[in-house]
Image (cartoon, rainbow, N blue to C red; front, top):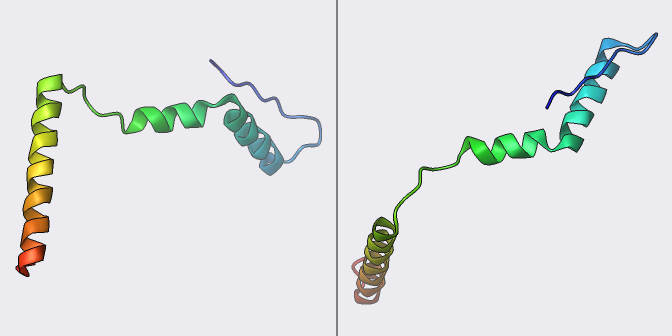
Length: 71
């Protein structure tokens, strides 16, 4: 998907760059790239469940320590 912006007669370089940036933003390319940039790897269900259980256990442990005044 190529974005083509041709320089108009008597148009400055700054104006051309501004129009180009505006076209790219309107096309949604920037948003798509930002979404893809930090896309993590696929994790299987078992790993997700184990991670969730670990986080819950840690959270519970921290709350318990806070109640006892150890944190």
